[in-house]
Length: 184
Image (tube, rainbow, N blue to C red; front, top):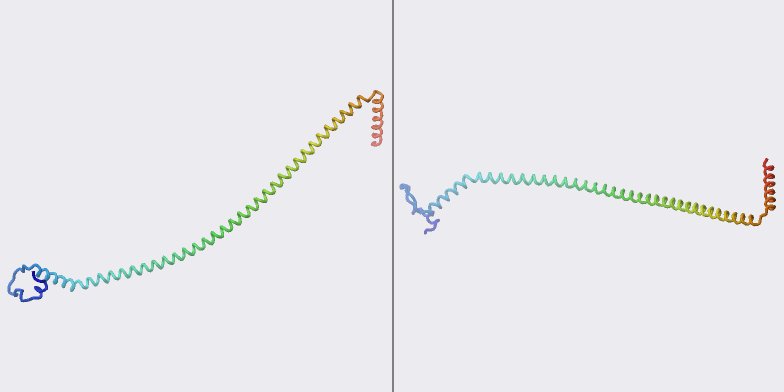
Protein backbone atom coordinates (compact mmCIF):
# COMPACT_ATOMS: atom_id res chain seq x y z
CA UNK A 1 0.00 0.00 0.00
CA UNK A 2 1.12 3.42 -0.80
CA UNK A 3 1.14 6.33 1.49
CA UNK A 4 -1.93 8.58 0.86
CA UNK A 5 0.05 11.79 0.81
CA UNK A 6 2.51 10.49 -1.76
CA UNK A 7 -0.21 9.67 -4.21
CA UNK A 8 -1.84 13.04 -3.65
CA UNK A 9 1.35 15.06 -4.00
CA UNK A 10 2.85 13.11 -6.82
CA UNK A 11 1.42 14.58 -10.03
CA UNK A 12 3.40 12.35 -12.34
CA UNK A 13 1.27 9.46 -11.39
CA UNK A 14 -1.98 11.08 -12.46
CA UNK A 15 -3.22 10.60 -15.95
CA UNK A 16 -3.26 13.57 -18.26
CA UNK A 17 -6.35 15.64 -18.90
CA UNK A 18 -6.93 14.12 -22.25
CA UNK A 19 -8.09 10.83 -20.99
CA UNK A 20 -11.05 10.02 -18.84
CA UNK A 21 -11.27 7.02 -16.62
CA UNK A 22 -11.88 5.67 -13.21
CA UNK A 23 -9.23 5.74 -10.59
CA UNK A 24 -9.34 2.45 -8.83
CA UNK A 25 -7.04 3.50 -6.02
CA UNK A 26 -9.58 3.87 -3.19
CA UNK A 27 -7.24 5.57 -0.76
CA UNK A 28 -6.15 8.22 -3.23
CA UNK A 29 -9.66 9.04 -4.39
CA UNK A 30 -11.06 9.17 -0.85
CA UNK A 31 -8.37 11.54 0.29
CA UNK A 32 -8.96 13.75 -2.71
CA UNK A 33 -12.70 13.69 -2.21
CA UNK A 34 -12.35 14.40 1.51
CA UNK A 35 -9.93 17.23 0.93
CA UNK A 36 -12.26 18.76 -1.70
CA UNK A 37 -15.26 18.41 0.66
CA UNK A 38 -13.30 19.90 3.55
CA UNK A 39 -12.07 22.74 1.35
CA UNK A 40 -15.61 23.51 0.15
CA UNK A 41 -16.95 23.25 3.72
CA UNK A 42 -14.26 25.53 5.06
CA UNK A 43 -14.64 28.04 2.24
CA UNK A 44 -18.43 28.20 2.20
CA UNK A 45 -19.15 26.99 5.74
CA UNK A 46 -16.82 29.43 7.45
CA UNK A 47 -19.45 32.19 7.31
CA UNK A 48 -22.26 29.86 8.35
CA UNK A 49 -20.15 28.40 11.13
CA UNK A 50 -19.08 31.88 12.19
CA UNK A 51 -22.75 32.99 12.17
CA UNK A 52 -23.75 29.92 14.16
CA UNK A 53 -20.98 30.54 16.66
CA UNK A 54 -21.86 34.26 16.86
CA UNK A 55 -25.54 33.39 17.39
CA UNK A 56 -24.59 30.85 20.02
CA UNK A 57 -22.27 33.36 21.68
CA UNK A 58 -25.03 36.00 21.57
CA UNK A 59 -27.54 33.56 23.12
CA UNK A 60 -25.02 32.64 25.82
CA UNK A 61 -24.31 36.32 26.55
CA UNK A 62 -28.07 37.07 26.59
CA UNK A 63 -28.67 34.10 28.86
CA UNK A 64 -25.90 35.27 31.21
CA UNK A 65 -27.33 38.81 31.25
CA UNK A 66 -30.82 37.47 31.92
CA UNK A 67 -29.41 35.23 34.63
CA UNK A 68 -27.59 38.17 36.19
CA UNK A 69 -30.77 40.26 36.06
CA UNK A 70 -32.73 37.39 37.59
CA UNK A 71 -30.02 36.99 40.20
CA UNK A 72 -30.21 40.70 41.00
CA UNK A 73 -34.00 40.47 41.28
CA UNK A 74 -33.70 37.35 43.41
CA UNK A 75 -31.16 39.05 45.68
CA UNK A 76 -33.47 42.06 45.97
CA UNK A 77 -36.41 39.80 46.80
CA UNK A 78 -34.23 37.92 49.27
CA UNK A 79 -33.29 41.17 51.01
CA UNK A 80 -36.96 42.19 51.13
CA UNK A 81 -37.87 38.77 52.50
CA UNK A 82 -35.11 39.04 55.13
CA UNK A 83 -36.35 42.51 56.11
CA UNK A 84 -39.91 41.17 56.40
CA UNK A 85 -38.60 38.21 58.41
CA UNK A 86 -36.77 40.54 60.80
CA UNK A 87 -39.94 42.63 61.15
CA UNK A 88 -42.08 39.54 61.77
CA UNK A 89 -39.54 38.21 64.29
CA UNK A 90 -39.61 41.55 66.13
CA UNK A 91 -43.42 41.51 66.16
CA UNK A 92 -43.37 37.89 67.35
CA UNK A 93 -40.97 38.86 70.15
CA UNK A 94 -43.29 41.74 71.11
CA UNK A 95 -46.33 39.44 71.10
CA UNK A 96 -44.39 36.86 73.07
CA UNK A 97 -43.31 39.45 75.66
CA UNK A 98 -46.84 40.86 75.81
CA UNK A 99 -48.23 37.34 76.20
CA UNK A 100 -45.79 36.57 79.00
CA UNK A 101 -46.72 39.78 80.82
CA UNK A 102 -50.43 39.03 80.38
CA UNK A 103 -49.90 35.50 81.67
CA UNK A 104 -47.98 36.86 84.65
CA UNK A 105 -50.73 39.41 85.34
CA UNK A 106 -53.39 36.69 85.10
CA UNK A 107 -51.35 34.52 87.46
CA UNK A 108 -51.11 37.38 89.99
CA UNK A 109 -54.85 38.08 89.62
CA UNK A 110 -55.63 34.39 90.10
CA UNK A 111 -53.46 34.25 93.21
CA UNK A 112 -55.23 37.34 94.61
CA UNK A 113 -58.64 35.92 93.78
CA UNK A 114 -57.79 32.57 95.32
CA UNK A 115 -56.38 34.29 98.39
CA UNK A 116 -59.58 36.33 98.81
CA UNK A 117 -61.70 33.21 98.36
CA UNK A 118 -59.61 31.34 100.94
CA UNK A 119 -59.90 34.30 103.33
CA UNK A 120 -63.68 34.35 102.88
CA UNK A 121 -63.86 30.60 103.42
CA UNK A 122 -61.75 30.98 106.57
CA UNK A 123 -64.11 33.72 107.81
CA UNK A 124 -67.15 31.55 107.04
CA UNK A 125 -65.49 28.65 108.84
CA UNK A 126 -64.76 30.81 111.87
CA UNK A 127 -68.30 32.20 111.87
CA UNK A 128 -69.70 28.68 111.61
CA UNK A 129 -67.47 27.52 114.46
CA UNK A 130 -68.53 30.52 116.61
CA UNK A 131 -72.17 29.90 115.79
CA UNK A 132 -71.85 26.21 116.64
CA UNK A 133 -70.03 27.11 119.88
CA UNK A 134 -72.76 29.57 120.84
CA UNK A 135 -75.40 26.98 119.96
CA UNK A 136 -73.60 24.34 122.06
CA UNK A 137 -73.15 26.81 124.97
CA UNK A 138 -76.84 27.74 124.78
CA UNK A 139 -77.86 24.10 124.73
CA UNK A 140 -75.58 23.33 127.68
CA UNK A 141 -76.98 26.34 129.60
CA UNK A 142 -80.53 25.23 128.86
CA UNK A 143 -79.79 21.71 130.05
CA UNK A 144 -77.98 22.97 133.15
CA UNK A 145 -80.83 25.39 133.88
CA UNK A 146 -83.41 22.67 133.22
CA UNK A 147 -81.62 20.27 135.56
CA UNK A 148 -81.14 23.01 138.14
CA UNK A 149 -84.84 23.84 137.92
CA UNK A 150 -85.75 20.19 138.13
CA UNK A 151 -83.45 19.83 141.14
CA UNK A 152 -84.86 23.01 142.70
CA UNK A 153 -88.42 21.87 142.07
CA UNK A 154 -87.59 18.49 143.50
CA UNK A 155 -86.02 20.15 146.55
CA UNK A 156 -88.91 22.57 146.88
CA UNK A 157 -91.47 19.86 146.51
CA UNK A 158 -89.75 17.74 149.11
CA UNK A 159 -89.17 20.67 151.50
CA UNK A 160 -92.17 22.79 150.75
CA UNK A 161 -95.11 22.41 152.92
CA UNK A 162 -98.54 23.82 152.20
CA UNK A 163 -98.04 26.67 154.57
CA UNK A 164 -94.62 27.61 153.13
CA UNK A 165 -96.09 27.33 149.67
CA UNK A 166 -98.92 29.68 150.51
CA UNK A 167 -96.56 32.15 152.08
CA UNK A 168 -94.22 32.09 148.99
CA UNK A 169 -97.12 32.62 146.59
CA UNK A 170 -98.43 35.53 148.69
CA UNK A 171 -94.97 37.14 148.77
CA UNK A 172 -94.60 36.82 145.01
CA UNK A 173 -98.07 38.31 144.39
CA UNK A 174 -97.22 41.24 146.63
CA UNK A 175 -93.94 41.74 144.83
CA UNK A 176 -95.64 41.69 141.41
CA UNK A 177 -98.31 44.12 142.65
CA UNK A 178 -95.61 46.54 143.84
CA UNK A 179 -93.84 46.32 140.51
CA UNK A 180 -97.09 46.97 138.70
CA UNK A 181 -97.81 50.04 140.77
CA UNK A 182 -94.33 51.40 140.05
CA UNK A 183 -94.84 50.89 136.35
CA UNK A 184 -98.21 52.62 136.29
